Length: 266
Length: 355
Image (cartoon, rainbow over all chains, first blue to last red; front, side, top):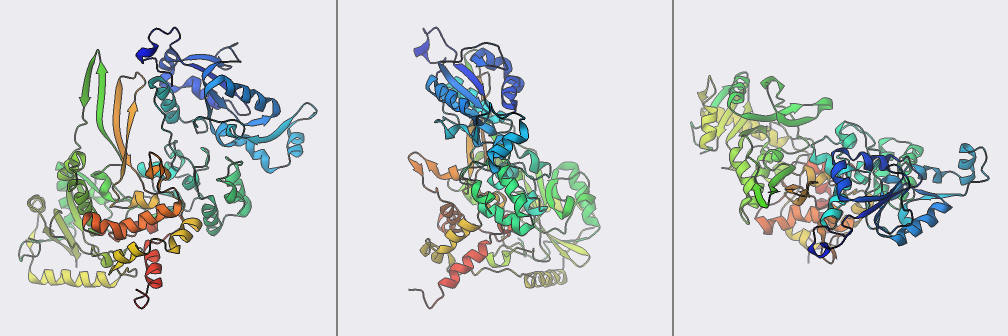
């Protein structure tokens, strides 16, 4: 990636990486998280050049070029998909941020119902609507990494920005919530208290926020790679959960993902 | 030192709490404390009455006071052209109070790993600073099979521990495995030397404890058998239908020692922390190296866990990696049982079929 400290770039005029943030179907919480950015807002704004971000500034160059394009939200309409493809061509790195962009998230709950029923339930006039099945960003374009979370996690976001500044490859977490849960020494709520915890199939990054507070994880970070959702769903059945409840658990976040499909079909 | 006549002491049941109170003045005492819904955890105690001495096994073995989940190695700071390396201060002197014999055995297994092939500075420093007080088990845990692994229910090792406590009728037999353990015992009031009668009473308690086991594992020839049956179907079937790769088994295992090191850069790009945290072979990226992942299937990862604990550990470190505490099966969300898997392989390879 672009490294301002590299002596090769000493005489270059533009030293800062150009960042653009685009929003599709979501609650805009990730964009807010990015702007809020806890205690690192000033350092970040000094180090990068935000060229397009609706929540941060008006105007901006929509056409690019960008060094990094951050995409939040799922794709639920036609125009979004075609714009996304243009952004992909205009940017060196394209990274989905937040569960909606990474794995469908909340917008993808509608995929379990008929498209027309959903449209009619929300809008009085559906004539102008061209909605499609909600899908994550990587269904349409190639992506260069995922910043997971709902809203996106601070740890992964920090890692992304620091990697960008240092010119190194970011290391994102790819293990399940259980690892972080045990690292914090929390008692397993699934085994000890019989809570239907989604931790074993959910990607880590939150620091096991719910299990540490004796609550079952509800998989807001989306599925972990190579998760065994079928085995967990069978275990939920054994614990006495109804099939509809298990279906809802596995379609609440990450409905379009291959990892959660076997669990939802149980 | 352990079995020599007259080297142990007898302490009345009620005096144990007074003794603990004395220890609290000089040390940070980490003991078993009862939490909600019958769960016991090891944590620092301020009051001896919060101790829960009659406990089954805790979720996390007390290894985390010697080998913490997350640990900082180095802190590198750069300011005005100068680089400064800071190493974190060592931990306070801990007493691990009332740990079970199996956990004590596990610590001696970790000792071999962290000091034989390479000297792990942070581990050995913490290990040296930690005093271990072992409480022998009067009855077997629900899932424990330590009698089969030779690690329980009473302490079987001769050194490496400091104090060994055995509950006998209305009293505790206190023995020591080191000089500092002896000094620790002598802080107690109302001590009296043990007699032959006390030792025979201890033997009776041990017999009774050994008779209470319900879970067994025949370890005779097991390492060789597991090495021969790497393609047994039990791994594939269990991995496909039950294993979640949640890493619970390795995180709660008292002898698991793998860790991952990571460098964390601060936002000013002038400070770097090098940290390590426990890692697990059940994790997908654990075996990812340049060129690929050599354990990309769930079956391979599960087999790694079983065969490392019961088979390859022997040639690696000269002892079995499993100490029979039963934590991996207690805390597995789908109840995968290490002994059942080993037994299934043993059944398929009954002596008549072998070669």
